[in-house]
Length: 578
Image 1 (cartoon, one colour):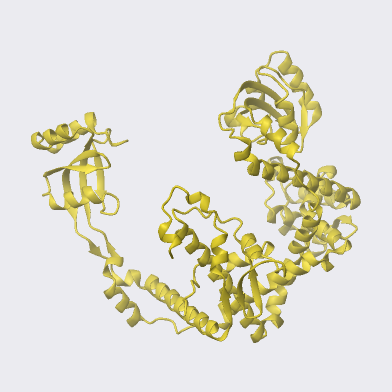
Image 2 (cartoon, rainbow, N blue to C red; image 1 turned 90 degrees about the vertical axis):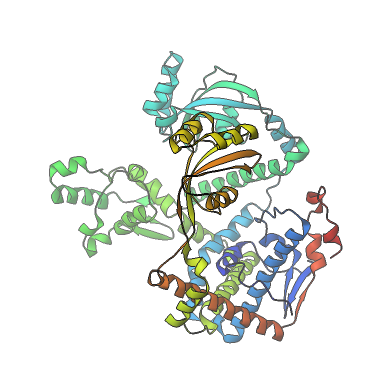
């Protein structure tokens, strides 16, 4: 019976994959059967879409693909066992599913939003053509149109854009780079910025350009050929993904704009006026002068004050306590929190803070709770939560290891718990073998060795220290360490051939391997033994479940998913004969 690699994928990874690992279609080719469950080629492709599969041979990639399939099969075994045990009726599972329903509703809504988004051949060709050049530009980014126009006029009159960016730009990096955004190609910037920049020639200054970030004033300073542009065929897939992502983003932003109009946030200024008044009563004037007008300690509010409603919308309301807590919980930086009397900014930020709730409300109104996409993904998520519960809580684990077991492990694995042997050496690394041999014969003292190393060693960064490598271990410098360990303290060893060059060494000190104290290691050993026992117990459980469950795997189909052209320059004879 095949031993499954049950410990190779953490179950939490599988749960995260619930958004992409969906139910099977009868039209899909079957990759594995586990009882009455199947894993299809499409399931597998979706689950592994972020896996790079960069391997040296076909055999190595096939091994990795089998490892992943094993983990998916083990997850199905856990799910089957969880249903048998009635975990689907567990209140904790129900609570977890309920808490995550909004995310799956939003996913179903998003899937519907972008279902008609596609990319034409003409769009891809146009994008590739625009990759011919790269630009270097400076920018000044400000929050409002009036400031942008004022600065634009100042720059037209000859002001230095670097100084203007340093003084006025709201881009946090401007204090460091003085507005220099460096070189960029088409696709690297937001649409409004790149469309303006690529329509300009070096030396030109753009009037203010509005984007979602604010108002940009752009000065192009260089235009060069993009040496990284490959052929259209080489870049087509990447270009398609970039265009698709931008289109999906635009569709999403348009949706949010519509939501903002459909569910306006109505803000009542009176609770904020009350808070400002309370600030004046609570804090001395000298402290108020230093406090941002956006700041208030929620602990200073009593129960009734905390329940003051500051904003309402069709689906709910926001209290002053909730508003202040959201600013902290969602980590809104203090400099971006609106003053308590800036009602327009408060309305904007409350909408942003409540956006998830508002969009969830819209998704429910549109009926996405009953959509096949939602039911499929929430059902899969429930299965994976049950699998995690089955593994963590329902499989009987062995008793915890005791002190006697820990000490026995310590005694049997002393190499694992020893500080490795070390040698303190100075080194001169040279390309010339004859020169290295001559130095090894003629140098007699450490001072002379260090002086020669300062002038001659080719080891990067070691001349200033006179070739001092410090205390080295065998793992880091195997060849040098082996020779140094055989060389007397105060003696010179070498030349040693190291990566095409020749190393001579001066041995300063030697430290034998040293066994660490058991008592300092005991807790870690007990933890390791506990984990090893848990892994072994789970492996035994998997083997038992496999013996009771009909499992079929189609490895030829799995192998057919490998792009063998990647290995065209590698001898694959052994792979093909297996």
